[in-house]
Image 1 (cartoon, rainbow, N blue to C red):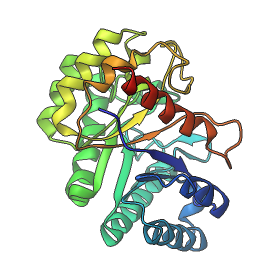
Image 2: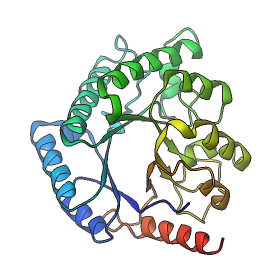
Image 3: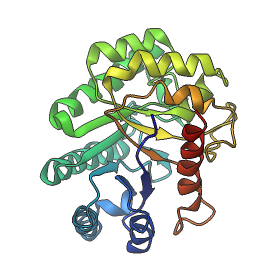
Image 4: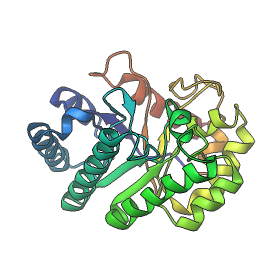
Length: 272
Protein backbone atom coordinates (compact mmCIF):
# COMPACT_ATOMS: atom_id res chain seq x y z
CA UNK A 1 0.00 0.00 0.00
CA UNK A 2 1.43 3.36 -1.06
CA UNK A 3 0.60 6.05 1.53
CA UNK A 4 -0.75 9.32 0.18
CA UNK A 5 1.63 12.28 0.23
CA UNK A 6 1.99 13.89 3.66
CA UNK A 7 4.35 16.79 4.37
CA UNK A 8 5.47 18.65 7.47
CA UNK A 9 6.30 22.31 8.05
CA UNK A 10 5.79 25.21 10.42
CA UNK A 11 3.15 27.95 10.33
CA UNK A 12 5.52 30.05 8.20
CA UNK A 13 3.77 31.00 4.97
CA UNK A 14 6.99 30.34 3.07
CA UNK A 15 7.06 26.74 4.30
CA UNK A 16 3.31 26.25 3.87
CA UNK A 17 3.31 27.46 0.27
CA UNK A 18 6.34 25.32 -0.52
CA UNK A 19 4.49 22.22 0.73
CA UNK A 20 1.18 23.16 -0.91
CA UNK A 21 2.89 23.27 -4.30
CA UNK A 22 3.07 19.45 -4.11
CA UNK A 23 -0.66 19.09 -3.27
CA UNK A 24 -0.27 16.95 -0.15
CA UNK A 25 -3.13 14.95 1.31
CA UNK A 26 -1.83 15.67 4.83
CA UNK A 27 -0.03 18.67 6.31
CA UNK A 28 1.48 18.42 9.78
CA UNK A 29 2.25 21.66 11.61
CA UNK A 30 5.46 21.66 13.61
CA UNK A 31 4.74 24.07 16.47
CA UNK A 32 7.05 25.71 18.99
CA UNK A 33 6.64 27.60 22.26
CA UNK A 34 6.34 30.95 20.48
CA UNK A 35 3.15 29.72 18.80
CA UNK A 36 1.45 29.81 22.20
CA UNK A 37 1.68 33.52 22.84
CA UNK A 38 -1.49 35.46 21.99
CA UNK A 39 -0.07 36.70 18.69
CA UNK A 40 1.57 33.38 17.89
CA UNK A 41 -1.58 31.35 18.46
CA UNK A 42 -3.65 33.73 16.35
CA UNK A 43 -1.12 33.30 13.55
CA UNK A 44 -1.30 29.50 13.94
CA UNK A 45 -5.10 29.58 13.73
CA UNK A 46 -4.96 31.61 10.51
CA UNK A 47 -2.35 29.24 9.08
CA UNK A 48 -4.54 26.21 9.81
CA UNK A 49 -7.50 27.89 8.12
CA UNK A 50 -5.31 28.76 5.11
CA UNK A 51 -4.17 25.16 4.67
CA UNK A 52 -7.74 23.91 4.99
CA UNK A 53 -8.93 26.39 2.39
CA UNK A 54 -6.17 25.18 0.07
CA UNK A 55 -7.94 21.82 0.01
CA UNK A 56 -5.61 19.72 2.20
CA UNK A 57 -7.75 16.86 3.46
CA UNK A 58 -5.95 16.13 6.72
CA UNK A 59 -4.18 18.49 9.13
CA UNK A 60 -2.16 17.48 12.21
CA UNK A 61 -0.96 19.89 14.91
CA UNK A 62 2.25 18.59 16.46
CA UNK A 63 2.64 19.69 20.08
CA UNK A 64 5.82 21.76 20.63
CA UNK A 65 8.89 19.70 21.42
CA UNK A 66 10.66 22.12 23.76
CA UNK A 67 10.06 24.73 26.42
CA UNK A 68 12.87 26.72 28.05
CA UNK A 69 15.54 24.16 27.23
CA UNK A 70 13.55 21.08 28.22
CA UNK A 71 11.63 18.67 26.03
CA UNK A 72 7.93 18.77 26.76
CA UNK A 73 7.79 15.51 28.71
CA UNK A 74 4.44 14.41 30.09
CA UNK A 75 6.30 12.58 32.84
CA UNK A 76 7.89 15.77 34.27
CA UNK A 77 6.32 16.15 37.76
CA UNK A 78 4.50 19.36 38.65
CA UNK A 79 6.21 19.78 42.02
CA UNK A 80 9.75 19.62 40.57
CA UNK A 81 9.19 21.32 37.20
CA UNK A 82 6.16 23.60 37.67
CA UNK A 83 6.79 25.89 34.68
CA UNK A 84 7.35 23.00 32.29
CA UNK A 85 4.35 21.11 33.65
CA UNK A 86 2.11 24.15 33.28
CA UNK A 87 3.27 24.87 29.75
CA UNK A 88 2.62 21.28 28.66
CA UNK A 89 -0.79 21.43 30.32
CA UNK A 90 -1.91 24.72 28.78
CA UNK A 91 -0.41 24.22 25.32
CA UNK A 92 -1.92 20.74 25.03
CA UNK A 93 -5.36 22.06 25.97
CA UNK A 94 -5.02 24.93 23.50
CA UNK A 95 -4.07 22.59 20.65
CA UNK A 96 -6.82 20.12 21.48
CA UNK A 97 -9.38 22.94 21.52
CA UNK A 98 -8.10 24.24 18.17
CA UNK A 99 -8.21 20.71 16.75
CA UNK A 100 -11.84 20.40 17.81
CA UNK A 101 -12.79 23.82 16.43
CA UNK A 102 -11.15 23.20 13.06
CA UNK A 103 -11.91 19.45 12.92
CA UNK A 104 -8.23 18.55 12.64
CA UNK A 105 -5.85 16.40 14.70
CA UNK A 106 -3.58 17.13 17.66
CA UNK A 107 -0.44 15.02 18.16
CA UNK A 108 1.20 14.81 21.61
CA UNK A 109 4.38 12.87 22.38
CA UNK A 110 3.95 10.20 25.03
CA UNK A 111 7.60 10.80 25.80
CA UNK A 112 10.90 11.93 24.31
CA UNK A 113 14.37 10.55 25.03
CA UNK A 114 16.61 13.42 26.09
CA UNK A 115 16.06 14.52 29.69
CA UNK A 116 13.68 11.60 30.22
CA UNK A 117 15.87 9.74 32.70
CA UNK A 118 16.20 12.92 34.75
CA UNK A 119 12.41 12.98 35.08
CA UNK A 120 12.11 9.23 35.67
CA UNK A 121 14.52 9.60 38.59
CA UNK A 122 11.91 11.79 40.30
CA UNK A 123 9.77 8.68 40.81
CA UNK A 124 10.22 5.55 42.85
CA UNK A 125 10.50 3.35 39.76
CA UNK A 126 10.13 3.30 35.98
CA UNK A 127 6.69 1.76 36.47
CA UNK A 128 5.63 4.67 38.67
CA UNK A 129 6.94 7.20 36.13
CA UNK A 130 5.14 5.44 33.28
CA UNK A 131 1.94 5.37 35.35
CA UNK A 132 2.17 9.15 35.82
CA UNK A 133 2.63 9.68 32.07
CA UNK A 134 -0.26 7.37 31.25
CA UNK A 135 -2.49 9.18 33.74
CA UNK A 136 -1.76 12.43 31.93
CA UNK A 137 -2.40 10.86 28.53
CA UNK A 138 -5.68 9.49 29.86
CA UNK A 139 -6.77 13.04 30.73
CA UNK A 140 -5.75 14.43 27.34
CA UNK A 141 -7.39 11.48 25.56
CA UNK A 142 -10.65 12.13 27.38
CA UNK A 143 -10.43 15.83 26.60
CA UNK A 144 -9.51 15.37 22.93
CA UNK A 145 -11.50 12.29 21.96
CA UNK A 146 -11.13 11.62 18.24
CA UNK A 147 -8.99 14.74 17.82
CA UNK A 148 -5.91 13.67 19.78
CA UNK A 149 -3.23 11.03 19.26
CA UNK A 150 -0.01 10.03 21.07
CA UNK A 151 3.38 9.41 19.46
CA UNK A 152 6.00 6.86 20.47
CA UNK A 153 9.48 7.61 21.74
CA UNK A 154 12.85 5.93 22.10
CA UNK A 155 12.51 6.18 25.89
CA UNK A 156 10.98 3.35 27.97
CA UNK A 157 8.09 5.59 29.06
CA UNK A 158 6.20 5.26 25.77
CA UNK A 159 8.18 3.07 23.38
CA UNK A 160 6.72 0.80 20.73
CA UNK A 161 8.62 -2.43 20.23
CA UNK A 162 8.22 -3.82 23.75
CA UNK A 163 5.21 -6.19 23.61
CA UNK A 164 4.45 -5.71 27.31
CA UNK A 165 4.36 -1.91 27.01
CA UNK A 166 2.36 -2.21 23.79
CA UNK A 167 -0.22 -4.37 25.54
CA UNK A 168 -0.52 -1.72 28.25
CA UNK A 169 -0.97 0.94 25.58
CA UNK A 170 -3.65 -1.12 23.86
CA UNK A 171 -5.56 -1.45 27.12
CA UNK A 172 -5.82 2.35 27.26
CA UNK A 173 -7.30 2.44 23.74
CA UNK A 174 -5.21 5.46 22.76
CA UNK A 175 -5.31 6.73 19.21
CA UNK A 176 -1.70 6.26 18.14
CA UNK A 177 0.87 8.00 15.97
CA UNK A 178 3.65 5.61 14.96
CA UNK A 179 7.13 6.95 14.19
CA UNK A 180 8.94 4.18 12.33
CA UNK A 181 12.44 5.43 13.15
CA UNK A 182 11.75 5.70 16.89
CA UNK A 183 10.60 2.09 17.06
CA UNK A 184 13.48 0.90 14.87
CA UNK A 185 16.04 2.69 17.05
CA UNK A 186 14.46 1.40 20.27
CA UNK A 187 14.80 -2.10 18.82
CA UNK A 188 18.45 -1.49 17.82
CA UNK A 189 17.74 -1.89 14.12
CA UNK A 190 15.56 -5.01 14.28
CA UNK A 191 13.31 -5.02 11.19
CA UNK A 192 11.29 -8.06 12.29
CA UNK A 193 10.57 -6.34 15.61
CA UNK A 194 9.48 -3.18 13.81
CA UNK A 195 7.10 -5.15 11.61
CA UNK A 196 5.68 -7.02 14.62
CA UNK A 197 5.06 -3.73 16.43
CA UNK A 198 3.35 -2.19 13.38
CA UNK A 199 1.02 -5.18 13.16
CA UNK A 200 0.36 -5.45 16.91
CA UNK A 201 -0.64 -1.79 17.21
CA UNK A 202 -2.17 -1.42 13.75
CA UNK A 203 -5.85 -1.25 14.83
CA UNK A 204 -5.20 1.87 16.95
CA UNK A 205 -2.73 3.63 14.62
CA UNK A 206 -4.26 6.71 12.98
CA UNK A 207 -1.09 8.45 11.76
CA UNK A 208 2.46 7.55 10.75
CA UNK A 209 5.74 9.39 10.72
CA UNK A 210 7.56 7.62 7.90
CA UNK A 211 11.27 8.08 8.60
CA UNK A 212 14.33 5.99 7.87
CA UNK A 213 17.19 5.32 10.29
CA UNK A 214 20.37 3.32 10.73
CA UNK A 215 18.84 2.04 13.97
CA UNK A 216 21.40 3.52 16.34
CA UNK A 217 20.63 7.20 16.97
CA UNK A 218 17.89 9.66 16.09
CA UNK A 219 19.03 10.41 12.53
CA UNK A 220 15.74 11.14 10.66
CA UNK A 221 16.97 9.93 7.27
CA UNK A 222 15.17 10.09 3.92
CA UNK A 223 13.53 6.79 3.03
CA UNK A 224 15.96 4.41 1.37
CA UNK A 225 19.03 5.89 3.08
CA UNK A 226 18.73 3.85 6.27
CA UNK A 227 18.25 0.20 7.17
CA UNK A 228 14.46 -0.02 7.48
CA UNK A 229 12.92 -2.63 5.17
CA UNK A 230 10.28 -0.42 3.54
CA UNK A 231 8.91 -3.12 1.27
CA UNK A 232 7.95 -5.11 4.39
CA UNK A 233 6.77 -2.01 6.29
CA UNK A 234 4.30 -1.08 3.53
CA UNK A 235 2.52 -4.39 4.09
CA UNK A 236 2.08 -3.61 7.80
CA UNK A 237 0.49 -0.15 7.57
CA UNK A 238 -3.10 0.63 8.50
CA UNK A 239 -4.64 1.77 5.17
CA UNK A 240 -7.04 4.07 7.03
CA UNK A 241 -4.25 6.08 8.68
CA UNK A 242 -2.65 9.30 7.48
CA UNK A 243 1.11 9.79 7.26
CA UNK A 244 3.86 12.33 6.71
CA UNK A 245 7.56 12.11 5.91
CA UNK A 246 9.37 13.51 8.96
CA UNK A 247 12.80 13.93 7.40
CA UNK A 248 15.68 16.25 8.34
CA UNK A 249 15.80 18.94 5.64
CA UNK A 250 18.84 20.77 4.34
CA UNK A 251 16.63 23.85 4.03
CA UNK A 252 13.43 24.00 6.08
CA UNK A 253 11.84 26.23 3.45
CA UNK A 254 12.11 23.48 0.84
CA UNK A 255 10.73 19.99 1.51
CA UNK A 256 12.86 18.26 -1.14
CA UNK A 257 13.87 15.32 1.08
CA UNK A 258 10.26 14.68 2.11
CA UNK A 259 9.09 14.58 -1.50
CA UNK A 260 12.04 12.39 -2.53
CA UNK A 261 11.04 9.95 0.22
CA UNK A 262 7.55 9.70 -1.26
CA UNK A 263 9.00 9.10 -4.70
CA UNK A 264 11.15 6.34 -3.23
CA UNK A 265 8.02 4.54 -2.02
CA UNK A 266 6.35 5.12 -5.40
CA UNK A 267 9.27 3.39 -7.13
CA UNK A 268 9.19 0.59 -4.57
CA UNK A 269 5.49 -0.02 -5.16
CA UNK A 270 5.92 -0.04 -8.93
CA UNK A 271 8.57 -2.70 -8.49
CA UNK A 272 6.20 -5.02 -6.64
